[in-house]
Length: 393
Image 1 (cartoon, helix red, strand yellow):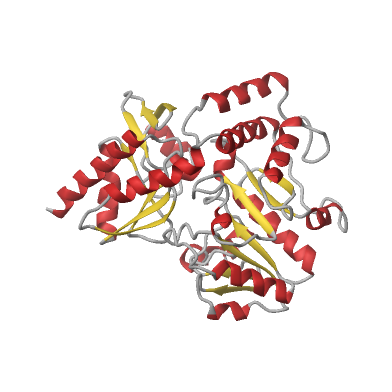
Image 2: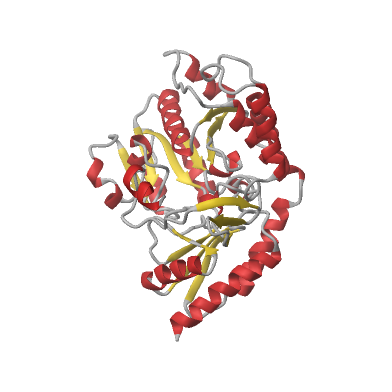
């Protein structure tokens, strides 16, 4: 299987981890030798309820028995998508009331950027250095990391970059700006939180000059930061909210949400302002609806902050410089990239799944399922500390 994997399936790096998967359940992924791997990554924040959660699986199976794809997005009334968007609106501020469902986070970013241009009639987009919003051409254009972009230029014109958390740079948002797009917490950069007042000040400047604020919650959203959405921690409400990853409960999804006034602009002048065949797919919407219900109707979100405290309490070591992030969106910052690589690979051998971040080479991702138990946290942290002890010797 490995040789076929490398021969026939396109790869994204020269050296994929190449663990062959048999099955997964709860906080564990099992390889073909039935070895359990404790999952501290959750499909890169995409499986908030862990693997094969019974309520999610039941919702998928029930929908499969009714119908799958029947019509392109937005034409037929399909109950799972309607109920999902309605539930999102219930848990969001009134200004975020209408949602467009897509197939991925990066597609939702594309739609959000188009909507901002359509609404303002402007072309300038301001993004942040070290930002990551996806890998399609528009999303890549607002990626703040030239090394990943240079091979694919030319990209979208009229893109400007500011430094995340720089109050001085906010003045670059002017009446020429269509939108400012920021991650609520910068992911690839190393899980950088906004400093107090920063997002609020950006929002004020956007309102002053008539620009729209897009917040990318593809990673921080759906309970990962101790709130349902990350922006709820920072006294800031975006004009356009982008979600994905965890919303699908392990199924592929993206969404962008705004006011009805804004979203209705995609209906006309031109008609079909943003279209997709499979966005809002009923099976995926059913999975997302079950996921969102479970997260909002249980104690998962408040428990996330308690689990963060446990991680911070246990992960104390001379090779750990700091732990960044919030809730269960955490990054261990180590003393060198070599230590980071060794830790991730050695932990994989010992049955613990860790992963890298895109741009911060000293960071180790810790984004486990929100349903992870305290015992599982302790077990995984013990493995991390044992490996760090060996590397520190």
